[in-house]
Image (cartoon, protein in one colour):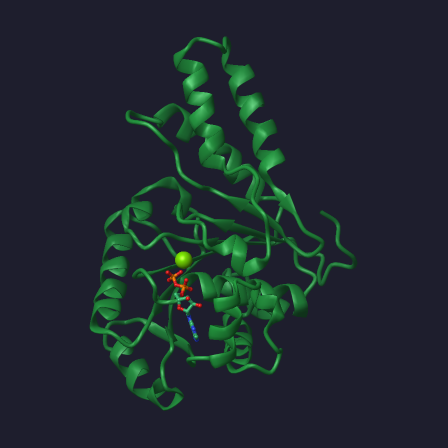
Length: 278
Ligand SMILES: Nc1ncnc2c1ncn2[C@@H]1O[C@H](COP(=O)(O)OP(=O)(O)O)[C@@H](O)[C@H]1O
Ligand SMILES: [Mg+2]
């Protein structure tokens, strides 16, 4: 996990989650943030695809062999069939397999949550998973989660330790309303975000003020807009990774300035974001 000189002696951990209605651009945002953070910083980055649909690997040009869900499914089956004995063994087995499922890239690591199969409760396996994932994310300066469109994950543990909640909206009422619901639900289940921000995707750039005001009226901060990007459409249609986009493409530029405003590219802002600075 050592990748060259660290920016700082402070080893802060930042967990960022990307939420929003289906199809608004969560995966695109997560992939472009991954690109910017790896290109502009030397931060250790863990990227997690927490959406069972698993679109993020393609956007990042990654091949996933094993997902956490498939491992959990198998483990539960083995437990049900009595193959395992002893608590320690289960935890060790699961931990070992999750490290195997971790895709190590030169610039970031990647984990796909996938889905679990079959009926019934995964409570026990989920509890183990939560512990392992919490431990895992402590090894990275930034953990970036691409969430599913549903809201159920908000009441699950995967989202509990989130520092920055990014909500993506597209130009639709449904996306706006979903953003408010996500905020409300987050409050209801007592998730304490240090920061909750909105990104407007596929918006004409001259709508920034209008959209900013609308969210300000809801006590939410619009952190930037990503324009509709034709090159992005072409790259996406080819199924190619977003790393292939020209660095000058409008979406890449927009996400770069969003990353900057989020404080991901400068150490000082990252610390402020975490409340270590006044
Ligand atoms: N700014 C953009 N310009 C062009 N196409 C985009 C843009 N944002 C998203 N798309 C496309 O819209 C579709 C849905 O985006 P995606 O990021 O997968 O949404 P989500 O993860 O929220 O479901 C994808 O085909 C993606 O390539
Ligand atoms: Mg997605």
